[in-house]
Every structure is written in C-alpha cells, then in structure tokens.
Length: 415
Image (cartoon, rainbow, N blue to C red; front, side, top):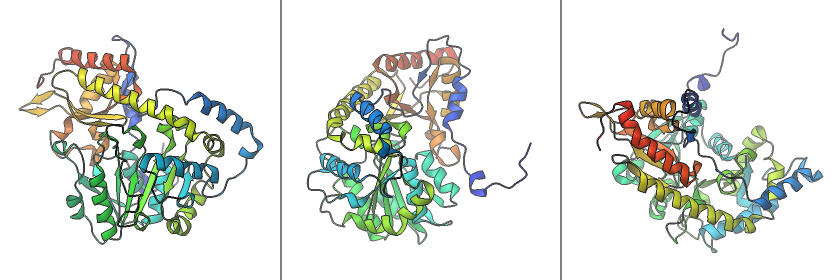
C-alpha cells in the first residue's frame, strides 16, 4: 500500500532511526544464556533521586505548571543553572540567565540551533563516528554533512587542523559532542580551545554538545575554559547544548538547554522554538529549579559509579577485544573476529548474532558512520557499548558471553 500524497524528500533521504533495528535482533533471542543484557541505547539505569521525584509530584499538581512559561524557560531554573555551571566550569565564568533558553530535550536544542543557523545547501562539519541524530537532522533539512574523520590512534579525538581544511564558503558550523557519543572520547580543553579559535576566525558557529559533561571525573580541570574571560569571547561563536536527561535521570521529561549570545537567541533561536515547542515542559523546570544544589552530590556519586563500571568493563573484556576510547556513558571497542584474508567481520554482523544468539544488545559502528560504512575494513570492526546501562554484575555477564561467543559462532579471532 502506498500513500496518495507525496512525502518530504529530506525525510525520505534520511536514514531510519537505527536503534529499533538492534532491538529487533534482540526479539529473536531465546534466553538460553540468561536474561537479555542491553548495552545499546544510552539510558540512566536508575530513577531520579528521591527528592526530585517528590518535587516533580508537587510541581505537576501545582496550578502554576499547566500554563505556558516564558519563551526562554523558567527564570528560576536558568538562574539555578548559572550556579551549576559555575561549579562545573569555574566560579569566574561569564554566563547569565539571559544567555540561556530551555528546550524540549537536547535533540530539539540541536534541531532548533541548526534551523536558526543554516539553509538547505549549507554545510555543517561533524566528526566521524557521529551521533546519528545530528546527521539525521542535517539530512532532513537538506544541509550537507561534512565528515571529519577521527582515528583510534588519536583516541577518536578530532583534529582542528584537519577540520580547517574542510571549511568552505558554505560552512555554517562545526558540531562537537564531548564526552562523545558514540566513542566516549573526552576532548581535552586545549582541543576545544583550538576549535573555538578556528570557528571564531572563520565566522562560523561552534556547537558544543556537553550532554555527558557531569561524568568527567578523571581531572580536576573544568571540561574547558571557553566560558571564562577567554579570547575570543565565547558569545561571538559558541553555542553550548546541554541535556538534563542523563545528569538528572529524567529522559522521559524532555528538557535541554542552549547557552549562546542573547542576540542569537532573540534574533533567531526563539523564533524557531516558538514554532517547534512554544515552551519546554513546565513541571520538570519547576521541580528542578530549587533542587539543583541538593542534587549535585548525587550526580557526583553517579559519575564515580560510572567510572568504576568503565574500569570493570575494561579489566574484564576478553582477549582480543580492544577499547579504542571510553568515557561518559560509552566505550568504543574493536571486536577481534576475522572474516578471511585478514579482513574482519563487519560489526553489524557481530552485533546481530550477539543479540539474536547470546542476548547481548550492542550498536555497530555502521550506525554512526556515513552511509553505514567505515572508512576502511578496520573501522568496520568497532562497536559501541553503553556501559551506563548495566550494573557491575551485568557488565561481568556481558564480558563472559563475549568470551563464549567465538567458539559458539565458530569464528576465528585475533586473540
């Protein structure tokens, strides 16, 4: 059956969301090796802290929560986020509540930002592997995605000098995610500073998605120094994105944040947001605003717990499975299986069989690369593990099943 009306060419030319494909593989699993172990989608594995659940119940029942809120979002939450950002980036940062707009999730923050920046035919540079929703947004809007290759020998950290060579008269933005999804790579402050200078010197935007910033605990330094009294001034080119979903464990309540120049917000972004959302969900804003200071300790505890899980995962991976980068929610791992003549089996085939036959759900690098293909045969062997999804017991079980799969599948291994 076909539709009697025509569909958007932008949508038809965009890949379908890939995660349902992985869960379709999992539906074929017969539980012969135990329960399903899901390390596919990056989702908090625990509910929000109790005080937030109680605060949300109160806010949802309040008559104030049923109407529209200001276009930028609740002032009380934006002011509270200024204080939170001081804890993350340093007390001397130059950020105010007027620099912020709240959105219905961080994905929508990116969609609105791109709609405010670029037109069909323009270009946006994305490091590869990329978070597929970013590329899908660009594709639907008929904006050209320019891949910036990253490499395992560099820890999947992108090169500012290689990015510079990709900038053309059509480039509107560079979009970075750090800690990265899918690789888990955390970009050093000096790399972020280099991208900042690059964007400012070419009069293009630097979109910096820091959804996983609260899970960096390996250094006493802030993630970067762009919000301090830096040169160039951050409002000339930086558009910062943040998601409340991971830090506060509220992905179903869809709340994100854009921090940028008030001129960008007033002249472009708020126009787009008025068409897409009018305002972000109000109860979660009202609940979070007075609680952010009290929730900070729980976030720190979660970050420490995730660090322990990442260490446990690395320590117990079977021989031959190699971690290319790890951080935040994710690990990017090269599987060891050969296909013949030295060429490795595709990650998609490995992930399909692990899900269908072993009950381990993972995402192949194919889901995060142009046209679902790696740059070379070695890149076809990378797999994303969402370490945040599983507690320590389930992480050990995943590693045990990975140990068994080579013999069960009859595959040759590099190990």
